[in-house]
Image (cartoon, rainbow, N blue to C red; front, side, top):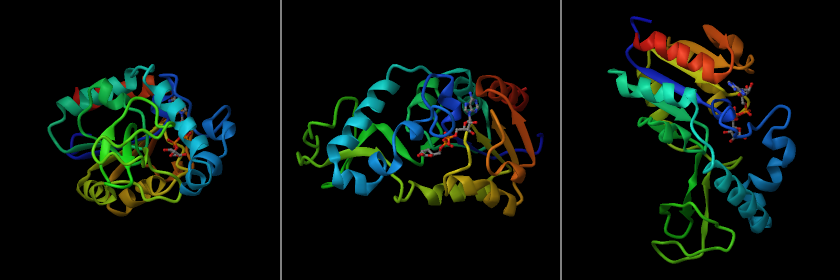
Length: 232
Ligand code: APR
């Protein structure tokens, strides 16, 4: 790893699993308990806003009780010590990377703790309910929605992510099933750019064969072990 200077890290629900936040797929995953079409699309929000807002209110409340785990802390330590470029691109809408101390974090699927006003387009920090349609703190319109990217919507800051991948020497994917694009395609993009690729996951993901190396195990074990190698 001595030639590595610039790193892009992609994280998914698996990194927060051991903090007690449900993953999306697999046994007991969130999408077994709720249908995506009912709660995570713009059409669902137009059809039944209260159902969607109640779902996100519950999720927003739940994540605030959770704590970062050893994998979040390890990435924060790497972020603090790494001299080259480093970008943690997370699909997660929780704030555990930030609470673990990481600074260079990009939320491509949005954030539970923000509300987006579709009238004035301002995103505000938000911890409470959206169900009762509170006014936007900026323009007072009652048009706040969760600042979460729904199925059928464009993930955030894709230009920055592809820019970081072009500069990268190493791409690391942590705790994601590789089921949802465009994030699932980053490993392919990285390979085409000649970037080294490493997967850290509990089990092989859908794109596992594309990685140069895969290390299997719980995030709280494999992530700190990898970070220790990087900063030794
Ligand atoms: N340590 C490491 N990996 C784990 C752990 C763990 N303790 N527990 C589960 N995993 C792995 C699973 O094996 C699986 O491969 O994490 C992955 C979680 O996959 P998903 O539930 O599909 O989550 P993710 O890949 O983040 O989903 C992507 O789908 O619905 C959307 O928008 C949502 O951002 C999400 C996107």
